Amino acid sequence: MVGVGTVALAVAAFAGPAAAKTADPCKLLKGSEIQEQFGAEVSVPDRGLKTATTVECTWDVAASPTRPAGSVTARIMFVGGKAAYTGLKTSPAFVPVAGLKSSLYQASSGALGVLAGKNLVTVQGVFLTPPPVSVVDVQAQLVPLAKLASKRA
Image (cartoon, rainbow, N blue to C red; front, top):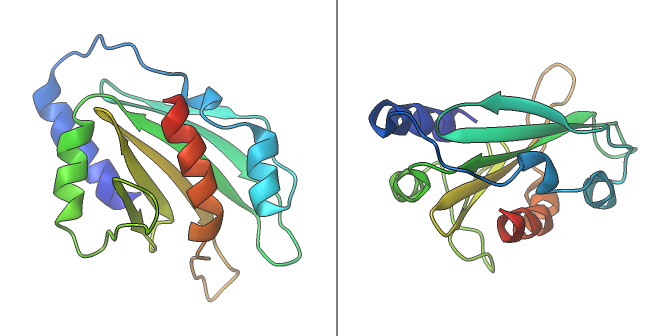
């Protein structure tokens, strides 16, 4: 997620050492919830990037009859989340999602961010077609997952 990642790095530069305690990103979603949305087998979660401002967790999702294999990542930006959200709102690449308060979706990266208090909670689905490579739009599947993740953050 290029846009959110760039903002996260910029915020990290000013945040200094963060001792903030945050939710476990691997508990924001359950494999069964992801499987329900994507209709395919889901791996056990894999803890990903952990910085002074962000933690994440990723699940691999098998291919389905209508979608290639891919992944779903849950990310919590617990330092500077509100500032990042405010900055992303100014980018034409991020659009609000109807019916999901304080949310922004970037189709090119499959990232759906929701401002949950001071945290920016992002659920990202990356599903790429075989060459010529294109991003599969999974916004409809991410909305229910983002609602769950933002409540649990």
